[in-house]
Image (cartoon, rainbow, N blue to C red; front, side):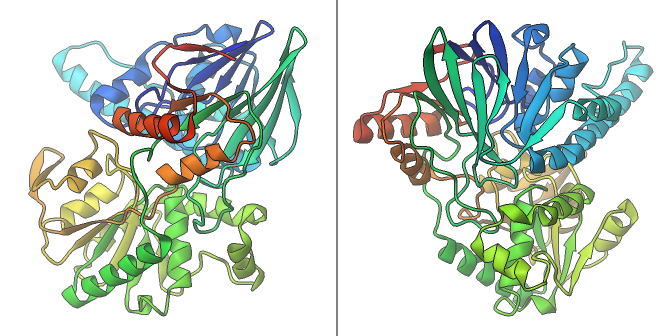
Amino acid sequence: MNIKFFGATKEVTGSCHLIQVNNKNILLDCGMFQGSHEHEKHNHDPFPFDVSELDAVIVSHAHLDHTGRLPMLIKEGFHGSIYTHNATVDLCEIMLVDSGYIHEKEAFWENKKRERKGLELVEPLYTTDDAKITLQYFKGLNYNEELAVCEGVKLTLRDAGHIIGSAIVELKITENNVSKTVVFSGDLGHKNAPILRDPYQVKHADLVVMESTYGDRLHRSWQDTWQEMGEIIAHAKSNKGNILIPAFTVGRTQEILYEFGQHFQEWQLKDWQIFLDSPMGIKATKVYAKHSDVYDKSASEVQGNEQGIFELPNLHMSESTEYSMKINQINSGAIIIAGSGMCTGGRIKHHFKHNIWRKNAHILIVGFQAKGTLGRALVDGAKTIKLWGETVQVNAKIHTVGGFSAHADQQGLIDWYNGFDNKPPIVLVHGEEEAMEILAQKLKHQHQANVIQASFKQSVTI
């Protein structure tokens, strides 16, 4: 039995790992590569394994860097089951269809250029119809429910606390009367984060595959994070400007809305107009509301008070393009939450065009920004940015609210690994090379762990 690594190897996106046992092939995640244009070109690469030989797919959670290439599997002939948590099924219904729509649009505009030049036309990576067909293969599970997915392989999903439905994948594998337990962390949540429970602590494994996104740093405390948020909002109010929050539509958007509710009086949010300018974010928020059974104690208590945890008296849901454009007529007093989280597309770029050159505007960066993205450029201090070919001055105040993360930080990752009763060998994935290396050294020198930093196409015996 072995596991091969075909994505998220010394980089953050493209999660894709293949387990081979009893002549069966089980794929863990099938994610898109995201970030720079060079990274995203890899989405068009052929799969480095025979899709027709796959027996099952297991998905850790709904983010596209873990699910975004699933429709390509179906197009290439996979007709088995895709196992994941029930909430992830609901989220994928939103996210994969939206992703297909974006690919269709990108191909449409590219072909407009190609037609004028007499070049061969391109096909979209996949379409909305491809995404809808893919959804037929999903099979939803609850946390802690054991299921045999193929000969010699039993699956249990544990709560990862990253986004709703996110799972730690626990596999009990038997081959030639030898049994092993493989645990794939997926993306581990940030302890004490809003809404969701802390990551489940698995006690035993023979091999751990663990993410390392923030393996090189510690988050600010939640208390400091809330204090900083309050100070930024107060400062923006005194400046009579707008606040723009590029936020991932799943996870970060819901956490922000929830905390706005919890700090509504303290942060004097009644004095603002708050806009959720994201059709997909609105749909995802409804999924979060539906799956209240996975909330932590605090969120459950708020829900129990018959008050929806995302309801605010001055919250406006913006679905249409026309409504979104009207928001840009507001010069002061608006808090605008919009995608994309790394500022690579979506409505946030339009709001940048109307606000980022203003000295009284504030940009709150509240999530991880991969190399090559517009969000990363802002975090790194860019003085100008390009929007649709136009150079725009960055005069707005850029705030990086680092404690607001859905990922465990370095200490959180180490603590989760130390929670295993044995000290199993560990393979690090899903992290930029420097972060992965720093975490590996910590685990080796301080905790005597046997650590492998996964390389592309590397095979590890279980």
